[in-house]
Length: 188
Image (cartoon, rainbow, N blue to C red):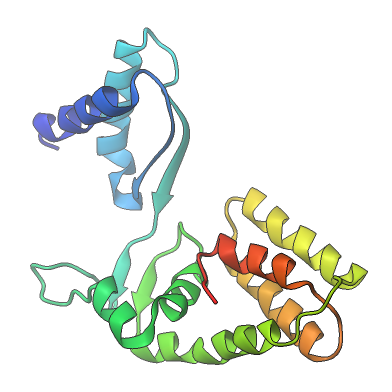
């Protein structure tokens, strides 16, 4: 890679975050050499200390199997998707894929998430004054899924299961339900 590209990110991070910060992320393709160079430069600035607690490398966004990019003309802006389908549907679609895995954008796959979104909205109308033990256990599983390498697809499955059970008669308080869907940025 080009040296200035590596030192530029180190400089920006150092200026904005100081000697240590919590999360540094980027696409999987940046792990080497870019993030390795950034890490080495930062270690020199911090006298050998590890400057970052967590490195997160995300999968690429593809379109028909090709890397989505402006230069290829296959880019779809998230703003355009959100305007057409709403932010909640877009979030469900994105969180249905693990952050490290590539996602091959397909409008039909996005639309398929509408049934889950409707289920979530129907569950909101079925909330009650208490949360059953079965649902409480699932809520705990939901939060544990994020402790397991931010396993958002598992979290989505658990939300689906909670909705199914509530619609079949189990109980959940509105505050508890809003708390779990709020983690994914879903608004009601």
